[in-house]
Length: 68
Image (cartoon, rainbow, N blue to C red):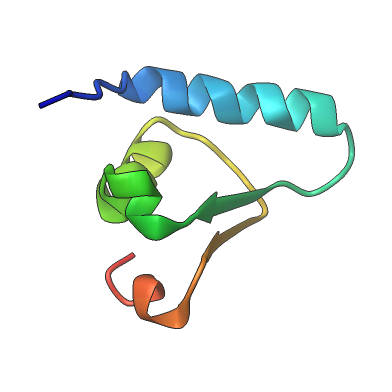
């Protein structure tokens, strides 16, 4: 079995890089497919806790929004 390890601080850093490149455009964080199996709730909480800011947070399907 393979394991994927994601450094939570890197999630925020990646979002901040996107924001820099987007300039004045609004940034939408998209959590789809349960954050590709990484648990969308954990990822959303990580973004909030790490102080990441974005204009909107969206999910792929309505049923995915309820837990987030």
